[in-house]
Image (cartoon, rainbow, N blue to C red):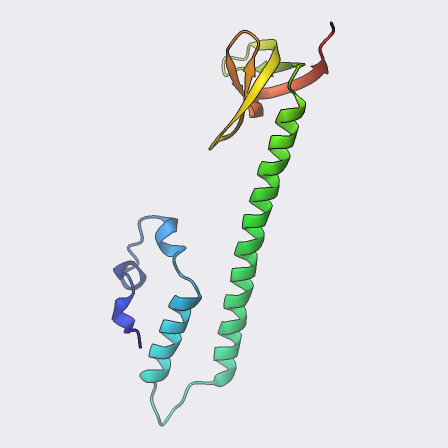
Length: 139
């Protein structure tokens, strides 16, 4: 049986420095805490089983929501990839950080951790998020 002391100190001290440390709270951690709670409960005043069922149901809901977030992120990435691919050979316009409008023909795309990046025919690159318009390139 896993000891309750096997959990990272961040769970007990509240010193989690990032959300990634807290996101490690999964079903195994829940079961470890539940086991410890049952082990150390007062025999003359046992815990309410409906509380355990409620906690288990809540954990299941959180896990399902996390799976939905992951699936949603994957769908967004796939949609962005499809949209970027459809821009190849088309003229795009954009607004840069200085407020200047530019335009160019998309020659290729690449994928980075920040999303699709468009390579223009002049060799410059542009984040897809900066695009303000797309039109068919005239021959």
